[in-house]
Image 1 (cartoon, rainbow, N blue to C red):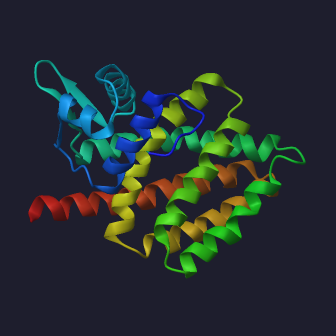
Image 2 (cartoon, rainbow, N blue to C red; image 1 turned 180 degrees about the vertical axis):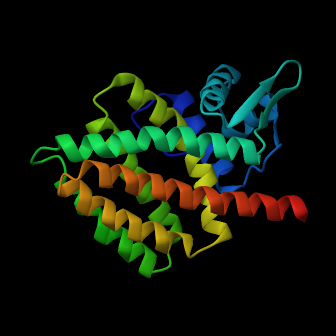
Length: 221
């Protein structure tokens, strides 16, 4: 793991979270504390704190006397996440459209050609990561409410997990998402509050249906 200006437990949580997002740690996988601490060369105390962070993000569950395991993915969980989180994100998009100031939006607009380039190069992993970097920057910059920002950022890892499922299920999903993303930026820059909020809701509804189809296929297999 590369060192960053964050705590060791946060580094561990990011490392394990990425494995959960990409499916390297599949639903239901056990996370044996002692073995994992040795593998990562960290203390069990740091690992336990990382587990608590991942539990807060709904990535793992901590079971008494059984330890940690990766959360399953169910239709109900997917529907609940997209309904709640995209309600928050639509509010964020509207706030951005209404309140952005010069110097706050230009770097986000410049991310769009990068997204298009990743997509055209069939580098969907990089596109996926850049899209979430956009969301995280926009949340910090435009939420204008501590609780709104906290809720969005706490749920972003789970959305990454589900959106990665969508990306694997239908590679055309990112093409549709990119089109919506392009429209969203136009509406934010044009200060069209309702249109920007509607774009985010459409994005979430589209992706939610893809994830649900993927889960249905897995359950039927």
